Image 1 (tube, rainbow, N blue to C red):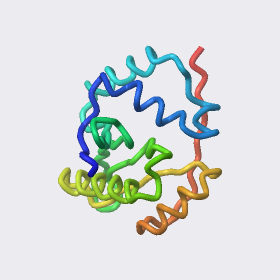
Image 2 (image 1 turned 90 degrees about the vertical axis):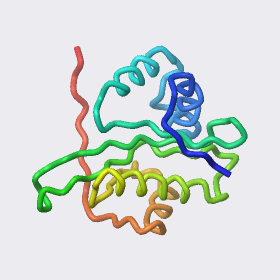
Image 3 (image 1 turned 180 degrees about the vertical axis):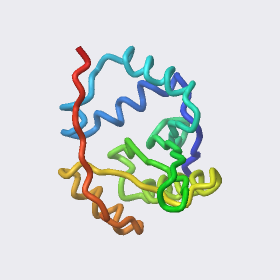
Image 4 (image 1 turned 90 degrees about the horizontal axis):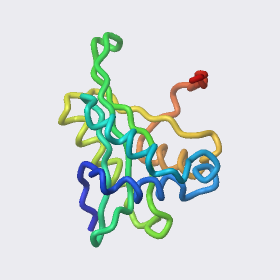
Length: 150
């Protein structure tokens, strides 16, 4: 049984381990926990930004970030943005991902959102199939641009 809750600062190392738990994550995530802890601290002060973990037997086995966005488009709809969805490799194919998305949708509905959206890296074909099975439509093309921080 998975218990979904807001992440605690003490969960950051387990969350980073989930983020690094595949080839893509290993290539883009750092092993420096301090930078992730600083980001967690900043997130905790941001309204409408939550980091959620799924816990089983006292261990973090899944995580996602949920951000609420109020806007004018789509008749002033409030939407939820889901990011950094990860499920530990050892519990994949056990329904944890489906439970994660149900939890995100419930939280979004409770927050007054009428739309939930996410992006998935083009290389994550299994994830894309999972999202489509969960009722998400690949309706848009996403664009990203790295900004120089120097």
